[in-house]
Length: 218
Image (cartoon, rainbow, N blue to C red; front, top):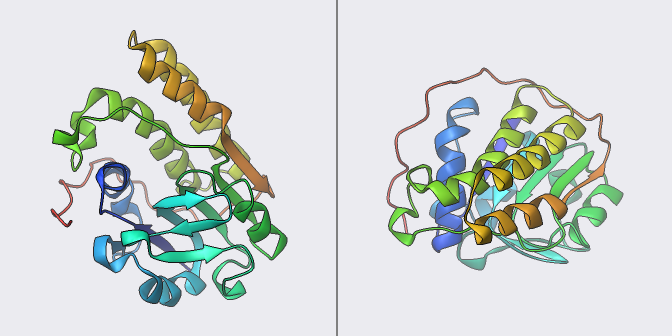
């Protein structure tokens, strides 16, 4: 089975989070990735059913998840079960762990990893496409990256979940910028796992060199 990597990139938060994931995760998964304009419902519906893991960035509400240009992907009671059944799902978006995540697990997803409040970080818009160049953004995004890479190493969802939370706390303690620290602590407290913590996916090859910056898609 493949990895469904769906990365919205149309505003500052999605450019930043998707740029980091594409750089540090993209080389590990299958070459067909839904980035920018491709990260919309019609393309997603073709790729997701074939995947064992879905990793997506976008915007969320308690009961819904959106990709590029606020394209609705899933809402509670409104999705194709074949897209989620038996899968590990990681959504890098706000709020979706409140209602949507539990609903996905109830209807067949093995495990859902997301956030039950806003996921927040401080960023410099000058580096929105290159968040690894932005120290404050990188402090918040690397725990997410390392948690995702743990899943792709074959670790359990519970292990990957704990890696992300632990790194949030470590990075919060490493900065004197109180607002950045507060964002990291909030992310740790609202990072949620629902479903089977022992769930794993097929391990992917480890890639130590990051990809070059993503294409400048708006």
